[in-house]
Image 1 (cartoon, rainbow, N blue to C red):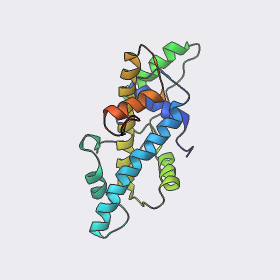
Image 2: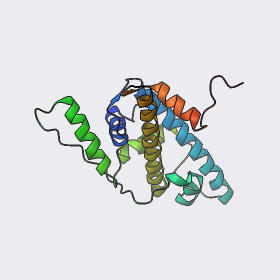
Image 3: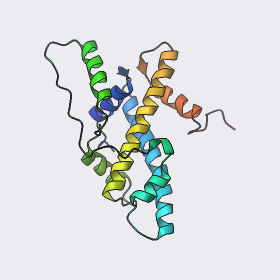
Image 4: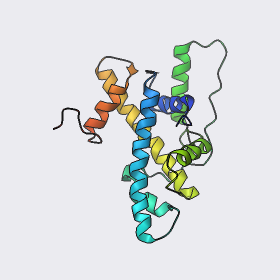
Length: 184
C-alpha cells in the first residue's frame, strides 16, 4: 500500500494548487484512491464478464469510467522532477512547483511502474491490459487532482491554507460519494 509514495502525492497536490497539506492527507489519499479504483474495476469486471474475455480491456474500462474522467491523450512517460534551484526559499519553491506541474499536461505524475505495482498488490483479481491500466491511471490522477482542488476550496472557505482529511470528507459528502455520518 505504500507504493503510492509521498512525493507522488505531493506532485498531485501541487498540480491542484495546494501549497500545504496535513501529514494525515497522504494516508487519506491512498484510501480514497483504493475506493475509487475498486468501484471502477468492479464495474469494468462485470462488463468484461458479460463479454466473456479476460483481462479487462480498454473498452470495458472506458464504459466504467465517469464521462469527465476519460482522457486518451496522456503519454506513458513520467513527468520529470522539477529542478531545485539552490538558495530558494520554501514559499517560492512551492509556488514554482505549482506552476511547473500545472504546465505538465501530457505525462503521468505517478510513475506508471509504481502505479502498476500498486494495482498488482491491491487488486490482483482484476487483470488489466496495458492500455486499460494507463487509462485507469490517467482517470485516477484526474480524480485525485479534482478532489484536491475542491478540498482546497473548502480549506480556503474555512480561512486555512492547509488541507486536512476533514476537507476531503466534506467534499465527498457534497459530491454524494459518501454518506454523511449523521445519515440514518
